[in-house]
Amino acid sequence: MSKLQNVIQPQPQPQPQPQPKSPYRNLLRGLVGAVALTTASFGVSAQTAQSQHQCPDQGHYLQVLGSGGPEINDGRSSTSYLLWVDGKARVLIDAGSGSAWRFEQSGARMEDLTAMLFTHLHVDHSADLPIYVKSAFFTDLNHDIDLYGPEGGERLADFIDFIDSLFGAEKGAYRYLNAPFNPDSHSPYHFIPHRVPLTFGKVIPVKDYGELQISAAAVAHGFLPALAWRIDVGDKSVTISGDMNGQTEQLIRLAKGTDLLIAHAAINEQTQGAGQFLHMKPSRIGEIADQTETGQLVLSHFMNRSLNREAEIGAQIGSNYSGKVGFAQDLSCWSLD
Image (cartoon, rainbow, N blue to C red; front, side, top):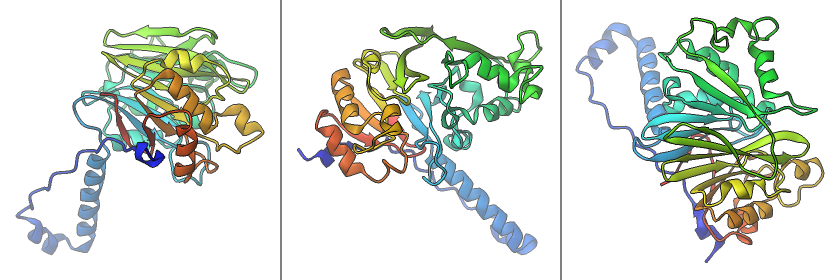
């Protein structure tokens, strides 16, 4: 079978239904004029675009809010993912720059979120967190949201310290947003940060929400503290590698038998130096996907050194993995079912 035949496509998103024409349209044209017509046409376009970006209402889906990295010339939002369960956005994984805008485009609501998970605290995975925190004030959110991130290291802050540096009451950069982080405040909701220890050699059970079970594994992203995440919902599961170089077996343990594996493809097979110290080469991604026996593999976190190389990367992965491979775009939806 040709390697290209193994390429899978994201879940088709619902197409907008045609709207009935208003009997007052011609009257409005006459009364209001060209400026009003321009505004109206923009409103219709925005609604149409938003509906095209939404995952189906039934089933389990992982939506890619951001499929890029830290570059600002790749045409993509930075890393972020959203787990949908029967039309509700339940878990946000990472919050890179541009993801908040993609969150809006996806039709997601803060009121439906249960948890936010962070693979690590590089800026392209966490920059939009303050936007989510601020936006919650303007919603009907009335329950707490758990935030999970890794313990610290020499070059990246501990997750609790990171949250305090942003939202701490005394010295936080955004201390005006402290109320939902203060358990003694009268906020109708709170963001509750949790530090996840980097325990190598085993899968880390993080939280059992009943319908959702969340677990993690410490992974090697150079010397930087980083986590891979797995979410089980019913008998379905998705695993997100986060940034890692693939030098340990942690992701294989975590992702064993997962329905969907999201792997970060930030480098090409020829990349040397710091790039390969921080990230997996395509051939290693293929090895891991094969050993986890994942149902489907989707690549994300593209950078210019890995963009527009689908045939090349697909072949390199295919030398070790015979399953289907997908290439993420911003707002693409991938079924777990």
